[in-house]
Image (cartoon, rainbow, N blue to C red):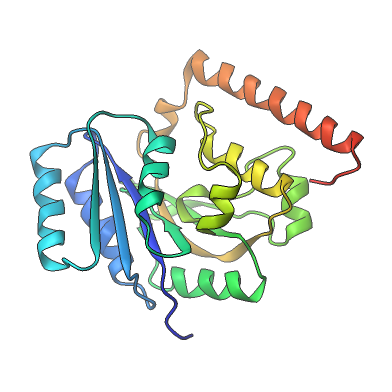
Length: 247
């Protein structure tokens, strides 16, 4: 596949590990189709080890990296909105600061984006942790547009850590908006309801580190957030159905 120019969009905050961040960045620098722009948002002040690591990359690749510094921690959604403003290209690849992209991730997803005339493309991811470095569970989602729309009524239709999307489509849909724990799902639903097209690559494109994730997403706050989002989905789906519009 020929070179396609795209931006990588990543957010990092003080509790991240420098080693994990290095592995994540290096996995994007090892793609069969390399990025031409790499935007990293510092969501609040970082530790010395994280700052030193970012400085090293900027010195080594001065034309590639853009470091966006926010004075305080504002959360993932708002941080990504700020980073998106700096992305040079229409196609943006999301990357979390502790995950690992497989070398052909971008080649597969860029090809799917063009072939299916999609506005957003995700793919299968493999969950891993320190006890299972080779991975222990895959998260595969429906492949085609109609399947994705039906699935979105019940569950998140795209794996956020490995999404590739068109900047204009996201901005037109209002970008990331606050909805505790569900900023990405909230965005996908708005994009689908606006008639934008999605596709999910069925092959594994990313390894997602899940260490500590279940602890972070436990408790009553998370349970209340689930109920609130389910109510939102129900109300929007009913409204769409009454107007004869599919999702």
